[in-house]
Length: 266
Ligand code: NAD
Image (tube, rainbow, N blue to C red; front, side):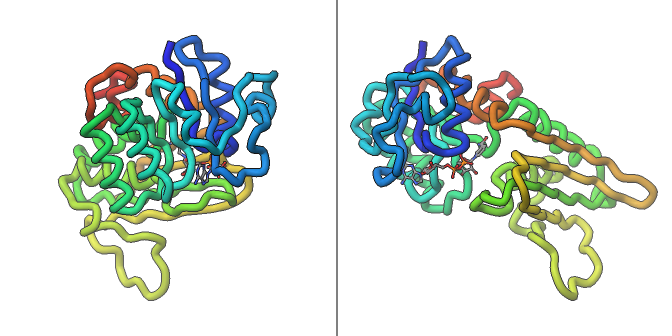
């Protein structure tokens, strides 16, 4: 049994992690952390997530995390370096789902991975990780006559764009084609763009309603197109993957791992 701490426990993903944690025999939630000024601080985290009493209060005190074997972070990008450094100092496995990190924040995560096992994935669902593999494979097989466009849609509250998953898909197709993403990405095409350059990858973000997460990669050429799509209907898909990652990472050697490794798809 792996003892886990949830960072961002009062958020949408935090709630899903608390609910799925109750159904997962491999983990036990021992700490629920959120920003110190959160209005629900001190309340029972189970009750906040719509469960029975869990006996774990929502806390803004990082010291409560020391009871855990693994941290699961779905919070806010700016605080991820502090959380990663704490995991490294205290020898905790670190499962990172938070997206929208700057280059400096990403460097801090890589530094933590020299000390402890880190599982880092823009999308922790099994289905999306299969989609990453399929998109890379299709891009490898199809030549540059197939124009690749990536479209994602999320709920109106999402703070970053494009989604970490859309960027993950973009990295998958550029890996398949041996391209550098920065050379070929075109984000949210607008204005007098001229004809589409061969080899470009278009990436577009839609926002609205309560959409949990839709992603489609289109390969379009003269006469036909292929569309690979994934639709998440509940955050449970991500939460189950993150809890599985925490149980998998606990006790592994330090290093950077992805969900392909956790799910046995590598
Ligand atoms: P949310 O806004 O509902 O929740 C974020 C939580 O983090 C909030 O409770 C907020 O109070 C808390 N937080 C903010 N600042 C904090 C701080 N300084 N210290 C501790 N906690 C702090 O967002 P969400 O929809 O739950 O998503 C959270 C993150 O997870 C986002 O970056 C999102 O893109 C990402 N996400 C990743 C996956 C995946 O599979 N990797 C899936 C869904 C969401």
